[in-house]
Image (cartoon, rainbow, N blue to C red; front, side, top):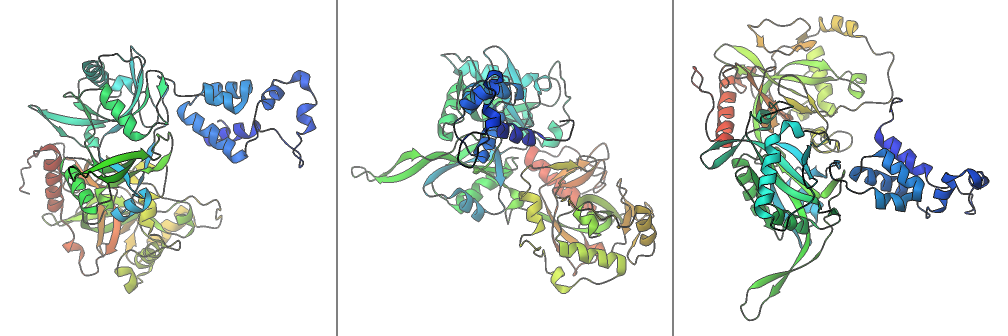
Amino acid sequence: MRIGANIKTVLAALAMSMIPASTSDGVEDETQTSNESSSSTNLCYSKIPKIDTRDAITLVQKTYDVCPNIAKIVGSLLEGGFDQMQRDCSIQVMTPIAPMLAHPVHSLDEVKEKMGYDGETATMEWKYDGMRCQAHFDGVNIKLFSRHMLDMTDQFPDVMKCLLDAMRTKSTNGCNSFVMDAEIVGVERKGGESRLLPFQDLSTRRKKMDDGNGITVKVFAFDLMFLNGESLVNEQLFKRRSMLHDLFEETIAFSFVSSKELISYDESTIKSYLSEAIEGGAEGLMMKLLGKKSILVTNEESSTIETQSEGVTSFYEAGTRSHCWLKVKRDYVAGFSDTIDVVPIGAWRGSGRKAQKSFLSPVLLAVYDDEEDVYRSICRCMSFTDAMYESMREFYFNGVEYAPCIDSGVLQNTSGNPEEKDCAGQHTNDKKQNIGGDCEIEVCDVQDENTDDSKPTEDDEEAKVQNRVHCFSNRPSSAFVITNESPPIWFKPMEVFEVAFADLSLSRQHTAAAGLVDEEGRGVALRFPRFKRRRPDKKPEQATTSIEIAQLFAKQTKIKNGSQVFKPNRSI
C-alpha cells in the first residue's frame, strides 16, 4: 500500500497472477512449465480450471468481502487455486465482513423500476438514523464492528449485554456462533417507551466506555449472515430473517426493525408507511426483496386468497450496493422534502474539474435574522449544474444577469442528469465530508485527470476579486454577516435560492437560530442541502428567517423526541 495502490488494485493483480498464461492455441506458456522442480506455483496452476480474467477478479474481490485477510487468501490460492480459496476463505466469526449496501432512489416510480415487482414480495423497513453495527458471537464473547469494519466493541459495552440478554431469553437450544447486521440508535426512555434520537446525539458517545454511561442506545436487528458455523449469505432474505427472529427475543434494549410486507407495488401503501416512519423518528424506508414470489390462489371452499412462494434471489451480497435493497429517504421523494429560502453570502474556489472552469463551489448560504438585520449562515451547498455555476460566476464577478431559463429551476447538465442527482445517488462509495461543526454534505466534486498549469494562482484571484461587481475578499462586519465560516470570496446579498434538505442539525460552525435552540448557543445547519431553483421574485430580506429555522428545528425535535429540549428566552 506504500506505493499508493488501493485494495481493489491489489486484489485484481492477485487474481490475474493466478491465471496461467496461454499461447494463442491454448497451450500453456513454456516459461511457466519448464522448471517443474521449483514450482509450488506450477503445482497451483495445475489445479486452476480455465477462468476468465474478469471472473477471476470478481471472485477474489467477493472472497475478500467476506474474508478480509490477504495472507489467508494468498495461502489458499497457492495451495489449491480458486476452488481452495472458496473453501477456506468464508465467513469467520470475529472477523468483519463488508456490509451489503442499498441503492438510493429519488422517486417511488424508481422503486418500481429497479425492484421489478413482477410478483416479488418485498419488505419495507424503517431506516433508522443511527450507526450500522455488525455483531459477532463466538459462543462466549461478542465483538461489534462498524460499517467500515472497525472494532467498536469498547464503545458499546451495553450493546453486548443487551444482545446476550435477548439471545438467552429466546434460545432454548443454545447458540454457539452468529454474525448479525443491525443498527444502533440513541434513545430517550420515559417509562416503558423509547423515543429515537438523531445520529448527532449518538455520535457524542466516547470511543471507549468502561461503564456504559452516556447516551442510552437501542439495537434494531435486521439481518443474520452466519449461525452456528454455517454461512447464510446464500440464503434468501425471508429465511435469514426468520432465523434471526427465532434466535432473539425483543427486550427494552433490543428490537427487530419495524417492517411491513408489500406483496405488490402500491404507491399509496409505501407513502403511508414512509410517513409513519418519519413521524416515528426514522430517516425513511429500506425496500428489500424477500426472495419469494407470491402467487395468488383462490380457495374454492372459503373464497379467500392464499399465497404460495417460489424463490427469487435476495442473497446477502457482502460489499455490494445491490438493487435488491433500496433506500427511500424523505428528502428524495416529492411531497416529503422540506425547502427553505436562503441567500448566497460567499463561496470557495472549486477543485479539480470545477477549478479548471473557474466555478465557485461550494457556496455559503444564509438565512435572514430580521430582528438583528444580519445574515446567519446555515450550510454550504454544491449541488448545482454547470450552467448554474457559470451563471453564478458571471453574475457575482461581472454583473451579468441570469438568463430567464436559469430562473425557472434546475437545468440538465451535459449528461442529461441533474447534478443534484449525481450528488445524492450516483457516488456509490457514499463519500461524506464534515465541513465544520456538525454539518455534513455529500462530496460530489470530480477530480479531473488533466491539470491546467496556466490557471491563475490564489494571489491573482484575490486581486481580481477586489474589482468584482457583486463580491469582495475582505471578511464582512458582524453587523452584516454572522458565521464561523471563512470563505475567500464574499457575496453581497443579492438573490434568493430555494433549497431542499434532509434534516436539521446543531452546529458550531453555522449560526442560523443561534441562541434559540440550544443552551450552548449552537446554531442550526442543513444536512445534505440540494439546490432547487432561484427565486427572482423574492428579495434577500424575504428569505427564511432565523426564527423560522428555530421553529422548524423545534418541530423536528418534537417529532423525534416527543418534547422540546430547550426553551429560549426569546419567543419563537
